[in-house]
Amino acid sequence: MLGYVTIGTADMAKATAFYDALLAEIGAKQLFGQDRIKFYGTGPGAPMLAVCVPYDQGAQAPGNGVMIAIPAPGPEAIQKLYDKAMALGATDEGAPGERIPGMFYGAYVRDLDGNKLCFYEMKLG
Image 1 (cartoon, rainbow, N blue to C red):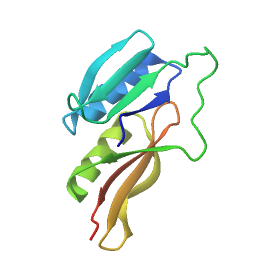
Image 2: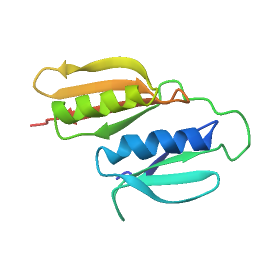
Image 3: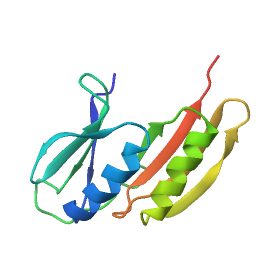
Image 4: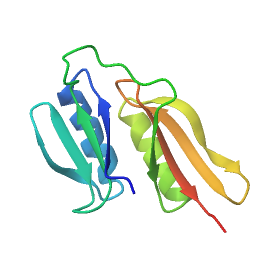
């Protein structure tokens, strides 16, 4: 259902260094891009995350209420992503933990441009 999500950056070099290292933790990498936009994913047909310098050349600003949720295969992987993001300069928005008992486990950070990320595992049914 989801093709890709785009978030803005004020500094492409810093953003790509951050996302190259962070997303490698879950087997994702830069798949393609141009000077102002880079697409990350695990392969063709899978959902992607794009990081871009805004097309209108206006200032980058994270959307209020906007969050990118990145699935991970369990609490250990979530902890690893959270720790990696923090080591790369992210800011804490909620340490790893159970949010909905038996159903949702997640951690929250903001990237170098203030975009909010969630690393999560959801168990439905």
